[in-house]
Image (cartoon, rainbow, N blue to C red):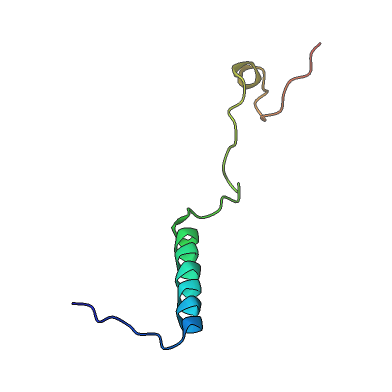
Length: 64
């Protein structure tokens, strides 16, 4: 059975609750996924016409 902690001063109890709240918020932040830097990730797929109209070097062809 867990031993009850006794805080002799009311301010100590309030301080411990603030620490617990900060720890809960920190835990939530640690549970979030890592931020995405967009490096090496495609954010959209090109339209099919852009893929078909591209020249072999990957640049779009000029009309005409």
